[in-house]
Image (cartoon, rainbow over all chains, first blue to last red; front, side, top):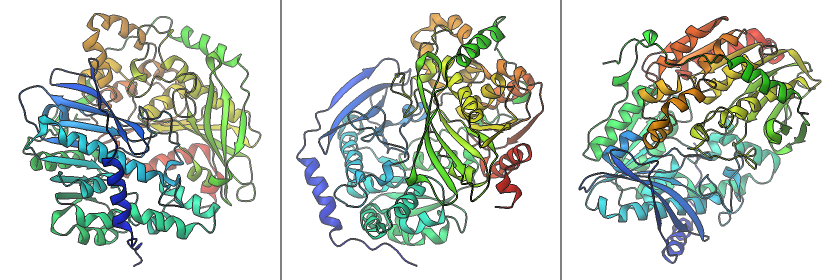
Length: 300
Length: 317
């Protein structure tokens, strides 16, 4: 088994990001959205400054009532659009859904390309676009955790590798649902698939034949394997079929790195079943009630 | 616990008297617009087996539409090729269909207006597209969006390496809807279609059955403008896949998750009942908007291959 080694300056690399963020005024702008508010919660559009400096965007939904409420951070997916927080979550939690630099609503002046984002600046850790994207997530997390409506309440973060990196570097999260893998053991995973976004890595390495070592060095900084020991909360990890890129054997080093904090969830591939299981876990971690959607299942 | 028999649902969608005339006029205007297709090779995303191009073509109102075009290299599989249009979901990026080209298809990943690379002139955003200018059928966002997908048929028909007697269309969610609308509007050209979890089907019924995006956009809009309900219904009747269904003549495959909270399955049953051509419907219990893709993907591939006969699959590649 070959695993991308942790760079010697891993800690310094990320400390520099933290230091840079600490020196930048987030300059928060909060805009109430009448259209996206509802009978249970108020929606705000949030604009913040991250490293660069670059202005990023987030939806922030706050339930009606006295609070405080548990907090839920949804890190950005790989794609230009993230849906606003779901109606069910907005009744139970203060929910923030973040758009990182380049995604819609945070795409001026920089608009990310799909495919293309994954390999942007990838041959140097200092220029890799994900250095800034992770910073965007950290900035969003800082803001959510600072809101008075969540003071003293548990907080969860949900998403792909960005959720793990965020929880590792901002210890206020008590629960993490890690539901999709991109950077985990990426240089081993990419040659085993032709699916995007990992296919972007295959294309880059094939087109620039001497780039593989440089790419491997860069992506080691964002490999969740190297961040997992720093995660303080409990972690629900989606586990796929044996032999797959999310199979139990492939994930074994990750589960070891998380240690006793990790709990595997073996996906059923039934979207309704898997959604409800994840929702019930998050609800239990945040001291809330589950909102299953399968109770609504229609009969054929 | 369930909410009842989806198959027994009764749609509230009404067929406008001038539905066909409305769309025939738009199709005629599109046909009178020169396509002006361009292809730019993308060596980074090509391989020994597949050539990838970024394409552009003209559509309604002078809007330039982008897409990805992947075809087998002639040294790998010689032409002619069947064409396969991959139409995108609501928030997903247009597919770069290299893996389909490897099977022997000349495949297009369509980016209708508002999608990345087709959004310089029209960009209502997400959320936004679903309710953009919804007050009138002549201004509604999907009026030209549907036509943009149809123009991809013109694009593949313009390619000498394509066998224009074999053109398929496939997608999920909004891609499922575009599969249906393209098969209906271009029933002169489409050989078959596979629609997963079809969206834009029974709009108002769907919005009343779910609080998931994107239909939640409808609920948000109606909460703010409740007095416009009848006006909105009048618009949407022109864009509903249930009303396109009778125009579809090609064989269709429809896949549905019975626990789909995004596109409620009731509306898919309404849709299939409205179809008069050959249709195979697969329902997956406990599945959501995935529409049981883990189990149905192989059937989708075999369905398309049965009708489109790509040489790569017939050669066992």
